[in-house]
Amino acid sequence: MTLNQLLYFQTVARLEHFRKAAEELNISQPSLSHSIASLEDELGVKLFQRNGRNVTLTKYGKIFLEKVDSILFEIHLAEKQMKRLSGNKGHIDIAYVAPLSYIYIPKLIRNFLEEDENKEVTFSFHQCLTKDILSGIMKDKYDAGFCAFVEDYQDNIEFTPLIKQEMVLITSIDHELSTKDTVELKEIEKYPFIGYDKTSALGNYTRYILKNKSIHPDIIYECPDENSIASLVAEDFGIAIVADIDSLENYNIKKLRINGENLYHTVHLAYKKDSFQPKSLKNFIKFVNTFELE
Image 1 (cartoon, helix red, strand yellow):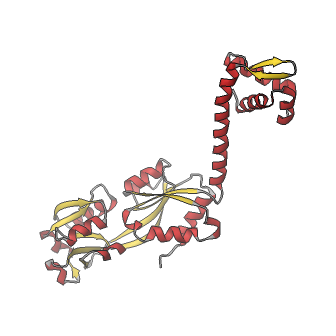
Image 2 (cartoon, rainbow, N blue to C red):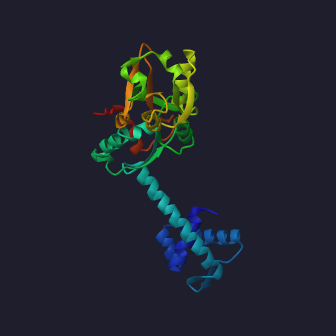
Image 3 (cartoon, helix red, strand yellow):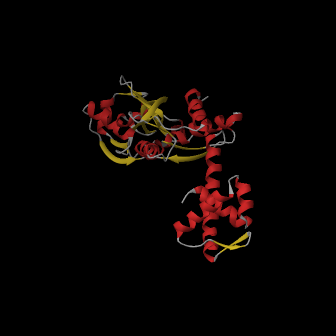
């Protein structure tokens, strides 16, 4: 059974006439008759009742027509959607780590959509951990991601550095370290510590930093992002090392630079290598690589 056979059957059923159907389909009448006969043989039922020059559907034909109409309609919708996605009116699924949701992602998307050729592009937004973003890109769940670089994925995913964030120590405003502007990394060991979720990229990074310096703080809580960490630090549950993001200004905390360590976290644009990119996605990737947050 072929798509052409379904289309031929639908046309004959609508016109109730083989010659008229053949003319509309731009094929010979014998070819059309042969195609319908082959379809009937494959299905094992008669689809049409011949009445002179006209034909009518049998009860089996009526049942089959309902299914064929539904199939061909879905194919028509799929074709329209694919044509839409391949042009400027595409849809893009993006995923990003939590800190970017506050300012970067909204401003990026607003600026992208303000360009005439992009104004009809639509987006779906997903906030996740780096590991889930990269897994989603590999499974074609996300078209692009904003996350940390992970070496295990570099053969299959393109990473482009975008945002360099300094790692800082944060304390409550009443903490004894809050009188300082800078701190030595070794000073943090004696205080309760709030860390990133150990399964996250920043969780792994901060633990690596501390382990490399033989520093073993008492990690009392783990949190998924900077905002949840900062809210606990503001209530003096402990201190933390976090990426210096804009939303930290919303919390009653003190930020201290870490002396002599030059600690930074970089957010990357990530997308699948050697994968088809519709025009809308190509335009988006190009735009992201030139976008600068004011």
